Structures are given as structure tokens and as C-alpha cells.
Length: 287
Image (cartoon, rainbow, N blue to C red; front, side):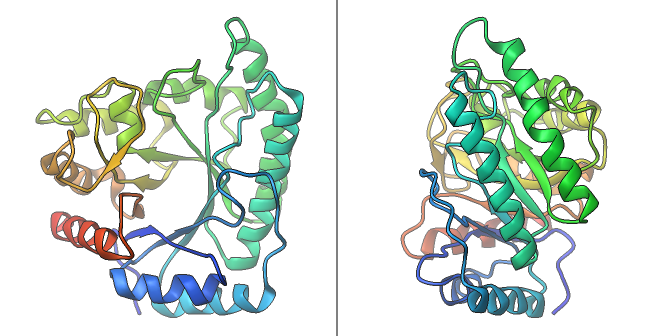
């Protein structure tokens, strides 16, 4: 199967066996891209994976022309003032990169993190540099998955929430070529980018390109929101049913910056029903 020019897919279940869980889900939802967890989303355990399931999953995605991405644990925070959290975060990213190589993933998404405490921002950014550079060098030298930083929804002394704040984040690692960006629409909305007005999504993506360059956006998380713009609350809603609204996603799917960039929905879903509907909407909007 030929890969789609603007592939649309969903965060995909992996419990009970990666190939066993994920491949039927891709088919049921019409997904053209997969995003998976390779460890507990809210824990530090780092399971080795099942080589048989890895091989079947990799082959199944290749057969379908489906690019694969990993989302690292939501606990990852390289800017934390707690040394144990920083160490575990780095180990988690290293594990995700190894697992990404095993399953043929293109990138590993991680949240930009937070300084947590007032006055810790400078130290937090030094930690980002110290922890990320070795990981980026190793992944780049091996031609492995890229690391993709995802701005947060804001609040809590975030190191990068609004897209322009990605500039200092990238500068902290000398704009390393193996650090890409994952843009999440719900996060951007929560951080104060008004995507609901005509031209709002376009202006935000223009700012993103101006800040990080034209080749660093490697993944989009397309999520509507249950909350108001600037709320700093990260509560996802199905496409067109939230406060962002469907027209913004039409702008998203038309913008030059998203051409060739995979888009994943992380919206509410009962079994595969919600994701199938959202995937279908985004496919319609891209045409």
C-alpha cells in the first residue's frame, strides 16, 4: 500500500501484544499512521518488549504503508528539580528510542517539561541540555528515531507551551538536527493560541515555522478541546465537538507546514468508534 501524502491516524492500543492489539485497530479505524506507548504512560517501568510481536508489528505497518511513532511516558520531565525524576526521564527516553528502533518508529514524542519551582527555569534548561544532547547524538549517529518535543498546555512553569517558546528550548541543545517537534492543537489552544478564529490556526503554524524552521515539524496531534482558549487545561474532545471547532482543523490540513507530516488523533474513543470518526473527518478536510 502506498503511504498517504498527509497520513491521518490515531493513538493505538498495544496491550496484550503490539501486533495483536494495534494492527486490527489500524484497520478498524482506517488509520494511516500509528502512535503507541512502549511503556506505562504513567509509570517508570521499562518493559523489554516481545521480539515476535515487534517483528509482526513492524512488518504489518510496512505492508500497510503506516509510519509509526512512540509517545514516551507522560511522567518524563527533564526540567524537574527532583534528581530522580530527571534520571528516570532520561532512562525512559533512551528505552523508547531503543524500542523505536526495534519497531521501526520514526520518532519518540516527549513533553517539553516544567521547572516546577519558581526560580528554577535556568537550571531546568541546563538539565534539558545535559540530558538531551547525549540521547540526540546517539540516536542521530545510529540513524534511529528522532526525539520530538511537544509543547505543553501551559501552567506549572512550563519550559515550552506557546510555540514561540520552542525557540529557547531548541537553542538549549544547539538546535540539534535530531530534535524535531510535535504540535498538539489542544495544547496550543490551552496555552493561549486562538485557533478558533478564522486564520488562527494558520497564524499559529506560521509562527511555529518561523520559530523552529520549515523541516522540524514531524508529527501533529489533532485534538479538539473541552475547555476555553488559554485555560492551560489539557482535556481532549472529538474533532468539531469542542471549543476549537472543525474550521480550524480544515486550516490545519491545508497549511503548507503540515504537507507530508503525519497527524494523529488522541481524542475520546469507545473501542474504535470515536477514533474512526475523527480519522474520517480529517481525511475529508485534507481534500
